Length: 280
Image (cartoon, rainbow, N blue to C red; front, side, top):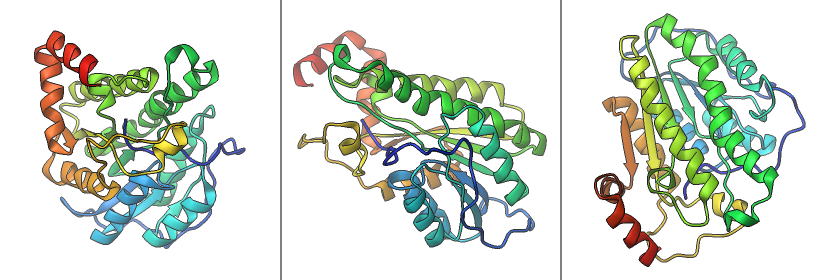
């Protein structure tokens, strides 16, 4: 129901490659502001907005990943970042991306995992290949990338992983069964990681957008046509990401009122299901 736009098409590459490179070099770490970051799904939408937000703040050196090479290079040029296009569903792509990012940056203070795709329609009509794609991009590729990055953060004793989820994963959305399931799994993944990393200095934030004004809906096959809730801008989600980093927040809903139906769903699931079935 949200956010991270799918690239226009899959890459034929088996792993990332650098397409632009600003001056590197590891400087002293700045507490609370600036550092090094890897942002996925950065070709457009939320990922691109996050890259621009960090660049505007200053003090950040970034590596950006996405599958649309042209758009990714444009965003990287605007943000003064290194573009590493790759399809993260390819075997080993997450580890290669992490290695290249660390080679370039020297360390990794922040990972914003935003890559995602969607599909809308009756589950009984969903092509099996699209089931694999949604789960592969939205859950498995993210888990593999986090697995590749975490040992370096733990060894450094600091770092933050920001997972971009979806309100669909909090409540389940009609016509988006697999997408909702993948994003729900991502939410539990974030919780479990927090428990494991409690004493390591590495933090995990889960940013949960509702409807976001990006190409996501057009690319999933069905545009967003509801008059309510109204879409928010990707820049608003990028601000929420930055707030999660600065304020050390575990969970952020965008917009904030979405936590209310999510809490109702948790406290009174029967009531929520009746309301959802009636009002969609």
